Length: 213
Length: 213
Image (cartoon, rainbow over all chains, first blue to last red; front, top):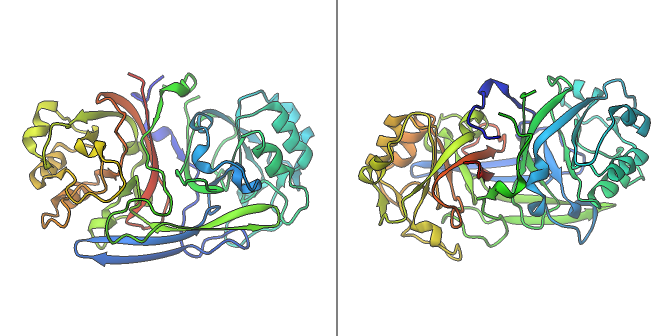
């Protein structure tokens, strides 16, 4: 394979725009852009949270001595993925919702749920999340990557930490905040690259799908 | 083409790690990571300049009403590229240095120069830059993307603004701060995605090459 014959029309951007005032997970530092013009160029001091918009969670997010987002395996982030149709799921994604998809080791999976109808105007505390048992199921399957269409894999203020901990303890890549509203559930190529933020718990990211199948 | 047969061993990361204390273009805001643990997770407030490390320049960097980095054509950033061997160039890249490469419209070009032997321990004011006439030459050729192995395409404190303005006025993508030290000059696939920072003048980026040729 190579990228010689890439058709630009097949690129689908599934990243949230980043701007001051955007919807954030409660408690996150707000996005601040402080631009200044000096001589012939403009530059900006950016302040934002490591978990702003479309972003990676690294093992260091869950574990105090966990690995940083700069060590995420790039091969986990680039390659074939499946967008699973979970739009009929209510409240949370459970094992029974995942079983029909015959998930296998090494897969990159993006979950499209009712979160994708959200307008991202205010934070929705009732977003659909991954159940703890379902997280364990994905960890046992040894998938490579799990992506969700809202700002956390875990229930809002929920006590069950397995959606982060079971996945991240197995070095399974987590991407949160994907914009899947206009994405038909099926097979794609995925390209998702975190910034090389040394030892950090997460990173905002640009994520695209390529409609190659 | 698709990414089904991607060989992870072919991925080359050409991005600078981002961390507090790293070498920056003089005048840039320093990198600050302010991490905190709340309940079961760690998050970080990140502060950095839009032109930190390996990064994109958008038209808004040069032009006060220029387009932001969120509008950069993704098809310019993904696809075949050539790493040109300019390691024998002294001081600046001139038209005569580029002519032998038979550059054509739409090409993505990364310039490997003596900058790539730099250790990135302190800022090197004498970095090799693109001459104004050479920038005009690249703009006339209508290349898609130009990447350099130091923190600016323009001479340090130099008065000739064409390296930014001639390229950005033609919507040619500029990537600065590439780590090409271990990259053999030849053809690769390039994947470079800026963050979707609304209306911003630039963006730190993860950039990779895939050794497919």
